[in-house]
Length: 195
Image (cartoon, rainbow, N blue to C red; front, side, top):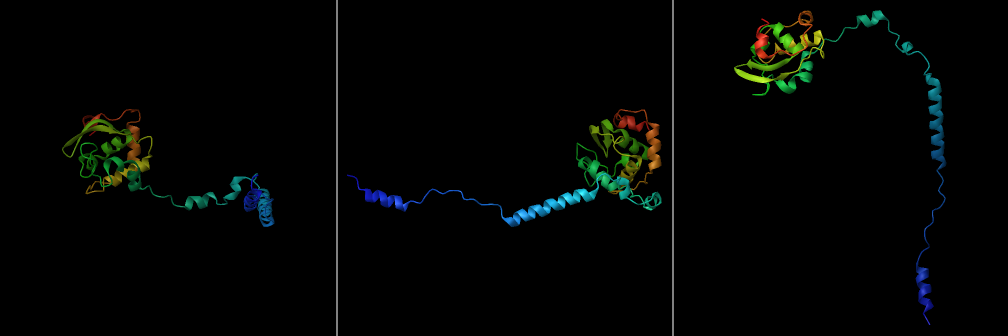
């Protein structure tokens, strides 16, 4: 006959299987949710999304005209569009991208430099005694006249370059001069004919 006292002792040693008890959401949490929900509904009602947006800005045209427009920053445009290839110091990358520092193309005719920015270059160009054969993208569709004037003036007066500033009117005139052109300049040989 089996020893039942041992089995009884083993059963008494074991705990019952756990059961999930009823744990309601605390009343404080329910109150907080109710307050937030009430506030959200009031906010939506009070915001009046059907009002005219023009009523939010009460400035007149005279006040807006008196605020000076921010000048175009050539250094910032250069950093965003040109520095990756020509480097922040204008040194370029040897055998890949030409330098702008000390370049005759930068210090020479402003019209040629503007045309390079407007239409880009595809082909070989000699800069500082080295020949570069690559592609420079056109910025005529991406940048406005004031922006091209600002970046051109910036590179013509940095890194030892001492050329004159370029005006937006000059860029506008150059843009009109080659308005029908849709292809990049074919290297330095074609650019030299612009002189």
